[in-house]
Amino acid sequence: MLIVLPPSEGKTAPAGGAPVDLGALAYADELTAKRERVLAALVRTSGGKQRGRALKALGLSAGQAGELERNAALETAPAAPAAEVYTGVLYERLRLPELPAEARERVLIASALWGVVAPDDRIPAYRLSISAKLPRIGGLAAYWRPALAKALPDDGLVVDLRSGGYAAAWTPKRAPVVSVRGFTPEGKVISHFVKAIRGDVARALLLADEPPRTAEHVAEIAAAAGHDVTLDGSSVDVVSRPRG
Image 1 (cartoon, helix red, strand yellow):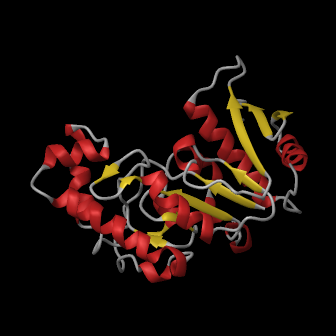
Image 2 (cartoon, one colour; image 1 turned 90 degrees about the horizontal axis):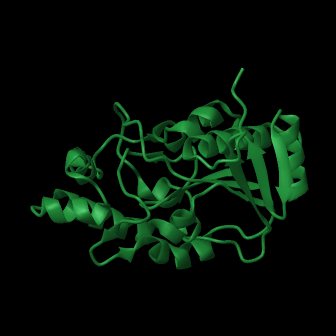
């Protein structure tokens, strides 16, 4: 089983340490050149004089201009394990740094900047969404798609917890894919609930005695963890419950 997570918009900036080493990230042989190009474009765009143009390219508001300074310094900024840098509701519920090393090895995190990273890969905090349009790079999902198709595994069960934009960057051709959808008890789809449910389900799957091999097994593990679950084809639908 491989669990593919979305990145988080919010990130915790490392307090110190060496900068990112692109050659030490997951799939370095296949992805380093692509990462170098996006990183250089992001640093150049964020540090340029055309701040308004940079904000527009990155989909940021004037109140988020501080993100440009952070991006401009990425090549020398301190790095820390991705499991600690990514924050937000899903990651708060998953508690990825607490999981055993063998469980973390079954996780990849999608990224508009890095393509994908493993939880233990050391990265700086950055701001770049998959919908951004960098000069001479264009759409990031299309940019990453060929390289990720060659680099990433295409066998065994894939539990895909990404949003549509990140999912567009890589879809396995042969491996079975299971999605997890979340609903409130009233049947509403609300981002906060969906992220919380996906974090809870991912944690249950990673701590299971045996990694799931089918959508049915994913649903069984989620149900055993206390969730209200139904299976709709390859989609595991979960109703959020208040935490006790």
